[in-house]
Amino acid sequence: MNRLRGSVKWIALVLPMAVVSCGGADSSSEPDLGSADIALTQVPADVLCVHIVAQGATRTRDRFFDVTPGNGTVLSMNRLPIGMVQFSGESFSVPCSATGMMSVPNFIADAVAVQIDPGVVASVTLVMLRNGRADVSVDFEGECEQTGGTCSAMSGFRCCAGLACDATSQTCRPPNFGDITAVFAQSCVGCHGGTNTRISLVADADLYNRLTTPLPPTVPTCAGMTLVVPGSPMASFILQKTAAMPPCGNRMPLRCDDPMSVRACLSDLTVALISAWIANGAPPM
Ligand code: HEC
Image (tube, rainbow, N blue to C red):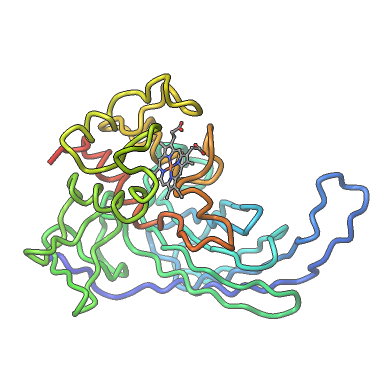
């Protein structure tokens, strides 16, 4: 078993302050500005940069912070939206100045929704899971299972980000195509069924082909984009289309970031799963 010992809980305290801005000279001024102090305790030894994303109903704010391993740290964020805000985080083993689009985070926190009210101290706990795709230097923290480790809902053992829990063997393994079609079945097929003229995400014999060839000109908004480019998460359109502000059309699942919607956006762990599958060459089985 590759169980990593210990546990890391990144406790983030969010303190909304000076909340309302009343219009004014700034043409982009929004009525929902707030500030937050996010306290991280126990920064792991191999974490030098933390990226925090705060996603509100109308706006997303993110910041990179250089951190000192082993220390407690307070991260200050301002210009935050008020209302229900989703906080998520990822960290890197290099200084923020050395991170780029291709950097693989060594820890990922699943999003936590927090109500930010004027004048009230909200608290957020971001539980950072070690990323199964990243190199592991085992000495502490990261309560999650690597490939081959035991996982089950019953025992509470969780696979590291980017790994799937095999239902039959109850062990963690790299994601396969079935894991991806299960995500589609849950989050996409309701709209992208067999008769959808833009793209069908039904798990039929041709699905893999539809994913890995450019969207045809008959698809109005995003023609030419390829959903899955085996080996390259960066080039794979599906990861842009399910993230905030895609280059064409709306974020999928449609209106998931609308606070009135019953539909959830893909969680960070689901995104990590899809990304790992693609990075592993998008095996069709
Ligand atoms: C509530 C219905 C709904 C759900 C759920 C939904 N979509 Fe969509 N999807 C749409 C609509 C409507 C469009 C066209 C408008 C647009 O692109 O914003 C679209 C467009 C797309 C496109 C671009 C094709 C084009 O029109 O250019 C892709 C790719 C896509 N969706 C993928 C997904 C994926 C992947 C999921 C699940 C994670 C998903 N969708 C979930 C309704 C939905």
